[in-house]
Image (cartoon, rainbow, N blue to C red):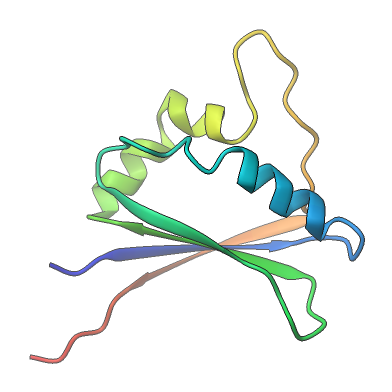
Length: 104
């Protein structure tokens, strides 16, 4: 079975990368038990770029979309009931979609 890969490229001001990393560290367990979720990595640039990459793996496109349309999505992005959402760290983001290439 091939994984569906989603990469969120988040452009962050030069002085805000650590804040982005801290937010992800604080929520690292928020995805546990999400149907179809395989795991994620936060990739910090090492070459002077200001775009961080959030790489997630899913069983299927459907599993990703189900999560994206769920209350869990809002909670994992700082939108909790009765609380004001956190101000975004990133200036912009772009979602990329891939599958793992395998040869037969």
